[in-house]
Image (cartoon, rainbow, N blue to C red; front, top):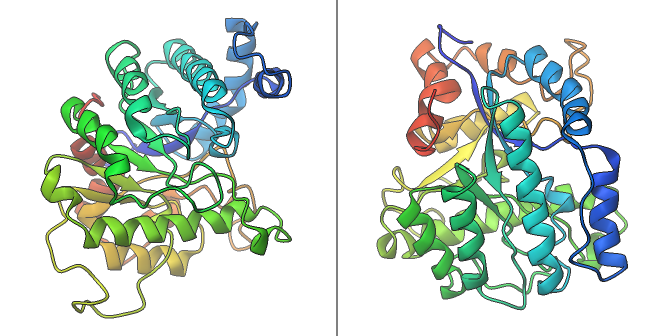
Length: 326
């Protein structure tokens, strides 16, 4: 809690028994999209024990729970991705049902570099209307080879229109990269994250997407991926009001980067996000705590007022994710 208000983490990833990932791998390797998943509620619940303890340890009261981006497997053929996506969302819904006071679902969508986003509309609608999800993840480069149209392109318009109609945000979170230039770098998907997020931010900022879809809300993870190194000028930063449309989470583990990210984007555009459980397990030498324990880090930032912190931890998530009720 912060000032007697729930701390809302907009960026969490699902925890599952090991054979869930094995099941998805089997669907791909055996080319069998109709394989039946056999996971009991007890097995799912056991997987949540450490997840819930980690949330408690990190002062997270409520978490928006999405897929593991590295396991979205958007590079698979569309007919397989449709099945992978549906199974993943059904499991997220089951986890939420086990702990409705702690989790709210975020959808995976059956994206493909071979198709525009019309094939994502039905699954988004199902997840919102039938499963009660609050939004969806979008991968700006589903094929991992930087071949998909940019996020300003008409390729995305069917999904934008449905998200606007349903009043649910889309959260930009890249996944696996098959760029041969970075294949020697361990965990190169992390580099892909900030490259693709930064590109998406600028394409959305400089295009007319939000003029065509004025009620569309898009959240870009990891403070937008990278910092702007220029002062706001016509050719480097868009000179338009994006305050109702473009938002960011605070999932950045380096304190200097996080500080600059909040200052550049502005408090009103920022929301608390940890990516827990995910890539933030490295221990901070100054605290002995995991780097994704971000609540005390943000709470310690002296340039933020108490009201600023309340906005980041609680108010802004509720403003952006209107289907979240606390």
